[in-house]
Length: 326
Image (cartoon, rainbow, N blue to C red; front, side):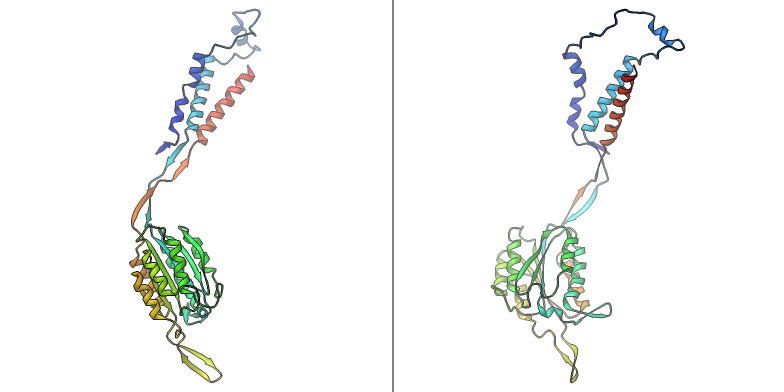
């Protein structure tokens, strides 16, 4: 359907008529000195001058040009079919560990071994793509915690920033408490019950100014729910000068603290030993924190004013040509 954004502009339609009625006519100081009643007959003869365009026709052309000009000023728009948008209103922050231990290659992706950060980027990136309707943010932490992306509906940018993260960017140590504290600071002013933090780490807190459990108490008082994910395999084979041996690459993972953080804030702790478990965790998070909460509709608008404006200019140009030929 067609709509007019500035419908009140149609009030200008009678302006030319009002001007004609209220203002005196212009004086005709250039009238002919001698009137010839048979001039029109002379002009109609072969070789005579063309007859002038009738006054009513010119008035109709000028009136139509004015109507089209007013119509263009009223900004006609074509309204498309309503399009549904899912909006959850949830503010979801991701906190990803970039400490040195994240470079351990104990995950398998597409048949090749990859480090823990690469596996996290792959699975968390797909999770980000599915969160249409949420505002997402990204915290990267190592020895210190940094806000890499503030809360935004621009999921594409958040995923790009996550994919560009590199191990050691924030230092080699792990400041879990500082990452939680930064999330609390960024989410405390948002509506309660809609604040979620997903914290991914593979170690224990070894740096920072705030202890993790103390930060979790602060998060609980601010209404922030935290889901913690401990990443890293329980066993891997390494080769050295003495041959092959099996080691536990996740021996530094402080699962007790990660569980305590989740319990204090009403969240859950998950253990991801391989890529399949990590993917399953994010699918479960989609169920625990569903995206769609309410629906909104919008109608795309296409501006149509160039068409009446162009037609008005065409009529005005026609009147100008007629005036020059007479």
